Length: 415
Image (cartoon, rainbow, N blue to C red; front, side):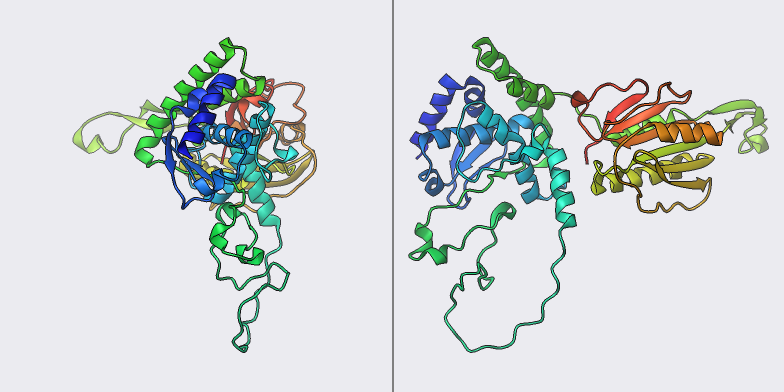
């Protein structure tokens, strides 16, 4: 089976040099314990029983699929996300790239038009949101004792619950219902595992794969065999990432006007006969955070953004904190005074998106904040004139897929 995989890898080098060159970086590992494939940026594991069920074209497509995971950084971008849902999100993100390259994938590959052009993080957030909206199953009463019978299927797909769980959140058919030895049944298609190396090795691997992806893209482009969407993928995957939390806090603290002044002595040292300047705090004025509640910014992102709002308020201590919920109009305004305990209420609103209302409301109220931070997907109408105060747009969409706003600074928020 290894020879067969090596042969299809060689075919990719000739026909699809981008995939083929990157595949040479992965060591093949036979692993009957996995269901289909797995990849971790160093090795490519495969189940020989599953590979035997694939045609040559399907195998070629699977190899291209697997190598796109480290090429996209999926093996070190997961963080604390659920591994099964992350696998699905990554597959939804890259499968269209494989198909658009003219390759074939096995039946059952994850394809959904809603996710076209979206990153794995965006898809993960959508899947998580949809999962949280599903009705929770009602607790069931303990089963009553029954006569001992041989376990059997009743045709409803409900077994006795003793079978192993399906990986990646996929519910496959019970092999026992097909008759015969379950070990002889062909493995069902499901997303391959996107595994992670130890934390200490991830940064070095990420850097190596960024360089490798750029080199492979350049080589394929010279041969005229690099589709446009793959070129865009490489540009996005090799773009330097920035921690949005640090940018948010840096932006907020840059608006402080605290400084040392000789006008008032530092009382810590006056008893020693030393006249030293004291910290003269002119204080931060009002701080404004706007939450886009149009429905395109998901709950998990809102929760993380809310936590950062509280952290900024606690550390910066502005005179007043305004938290504004807005879609096409303002749905809620919360105001907290300095020193007051902060407890953000649930978001309100839903509908379209317009950025005009919060700026207009501040002007009507005579509020001139030290800064404003706006969490949004950046798809809306901007004010006709820029405000006089600094603005930070916290975009839930990748920066390379949005138009530059007419004013302010932009940071990409990925939770």
